[in-house]
Length: 565
Image (cartoon, rainbow, N blue to C red; front, side):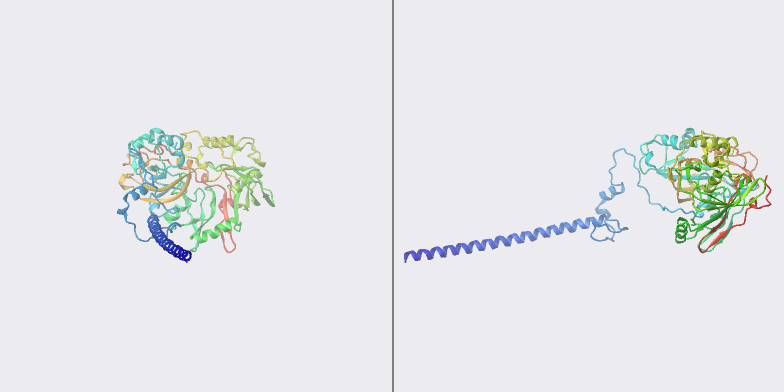
């Protein structure tokens, strides 16, 4: 019995111990679960706050990024985060003491469009069968190029802007004509930084062009078709701005916002298409790419062109974009042109041309290869190519030697303007560069002219003050370095023009030749070109698509009864 009683007490004690352990275990688990819930709540609160901060950093005008919980439409509390906003304003980089501050780049309209603001920069006048532009002030504006970063302004002007002497740029600085980030530069030794914004104003002179009126053939709300006179560039480039098809259509016909479908060489005349809308432009561009647009040209070539159909399929290589020089070369692009003689007057032939591809100067290069260059072609009819003028593709000299010979020939004839060379080469300030970029791409070395502002210099005064230079506008015009040089390069906001010349009046509507005392072009008297020297005997006669056809009349030089000088 005593043994049994002992066992019972032991069992009872073990049960009590078991109940105690179970109760403590439950309490432990309860506390553990409660702590876990608290930690989860804290983590959720932290995530919510983090997400809220991320939302605050999202651009309220853009699509919400993936790390933002939702779009925040309300304006952020600027007072709550002054340090962060200040840092963002400085581009996220702390500025060092004494370091020059460069404002962030501004967003600009990338579209190329000209308005009345640009058209009003100056005016035209006519003299001796030529269309002329009154000299005017013009601002060039551009952001610092990557290759300029770390260089001084003086180094950049010496290496890339050679149209004017260093003395000119020093004088321009003294007069506040060169600006950096809208502040006049007082020292050309300032080092350029990324996002620096340069502004320069030049006294701009444009070469005269043919005074022949430009006829609008079609304007149906979808396309504008014109008969382009020779000597006119299609759009602003090089030394030309107001003497271009785009500006003349805008100034005289009220047609602006046009989309270029194709281009014609400056000396070529004929059918030129523009689209009124982006949709029509894309449609026509696709037709050009798919070669669904039939093009017909007419030209007058030297000698007796063979009868019957002549096909040339020689590849064409661009030798120099600066001059616009091409030649037949096995490394060139595939090209095909079909020719057919229309008439022969004993000295020259009128030839019908059907270019089936669209290479640069294709018709002119193929005719030169066949031994029948266009009668007055200043490039491919030049004797600089040698006695046979590259007939059969035989040149007999390097590309550099060819380019040098071509420039020297036109220099001796005082006809460098026909090659559209930069100003410093036309005026003889610098010997021509003869570097050739064989197989170079068209977008080789470009400078972006972001904005322009101008003031006209017409009739009896050219008093454009600093405060009067308000006509500013955007243009997405990309130019090569030589193109910017040819337009006078970088100069700046101007003071009152210096004096009025005592020279004889230029025209009945332009009684004075107004000079700018820093403008080198104002000190040069150039003879006017003859009207016949401003055109080439190559004419775009007809453009035909699946549901349209546009054509012009034959030019006088293409008619059988034309008398050759």
